Length: 77
Image (tube, rainbow, N blue to C red; front, side, top):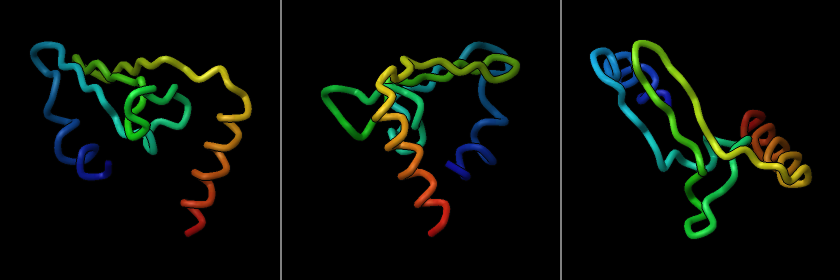
């Protein structure tokens, strides 16, 4: 994700909209996970002269808490 943010993101969507989708689930803890492929999230980003995020947000409180705990454990490591 760091490579994307530092090398790719600054150069996309300058002159026309660009959609990024199938974002990794572990980079999208607030988004709903794809039912057919657990590796990706129901999230997309629209780039056009700035960044706009979009997703199907998770409404399952227990899943959100679990995802936050997993994310925090990874940060500690």
